[in-house]
Image (cartoon, rainbow, N blue to C red):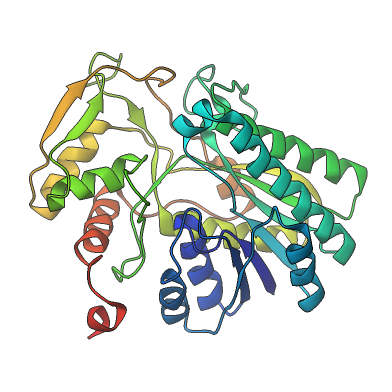
Length: 340
């Protein structure tokens, strides 16, 4: 299958590209480097063991995107591209609506012109907000608490309307929970620009001495240790979920929503303790005030994905922590040195 991957140099996109390529699919990546680095491309090709086409294109540039669809014939698209920092979305909502919505509309227009009607969309469990009682199923009520989550839900609604208007469209809306970890080789992982927004890359930077301590936002939640509980999923399990979704769309039209999570909740302190144990390192932390909008507990019911996609998360929290630390420790090495 010939697959266009938007945002394919980003954290989840790069791991998915490796998984697709290693299974013999022909991958084409478009990326504008807002949330990624150019040197990731060589690592994707090395790990995927097949050539990959890379085009430096911003999806807001309709002409450049149209040229991509003129040059290549795709069977399907996986759409990762977009801005993803919750805090930034609250401060600058117009930026998020422009980037995440307009880029998607441009992509869908070009797909329609090219008669490419299979799409896997990178959505988020953020759409559930704080109204749902875990384990959360796909039919749980949505409750948007920030502009980032709003853009995800709005794109889901656009894709649902599109599938209803044209029975040839096949879309999979994948609601991720909390991806962490890295490729087991240590060559690919999460490497955010600036201060990390997500827990694991901040934690690994503390472990390496780049940052003094980890801030834990609140310790009086109604959980077993007072810290927030989340559903952590290994990024390679998540990548495999995208491959399964593509296969599913070959024989299923319409819009289909799937949770991708481990189905188990771990607290922030659980994560820190596991990281310390499996990697034999110490993580200094401080308890600070809660953040507005954070909820106590969130974890998935992913039984629909197991039933319909034949997918389930198989990697445990310890493996997630080991792989994340292996990646962080090797970040300053070149690819050639790492492979020696």
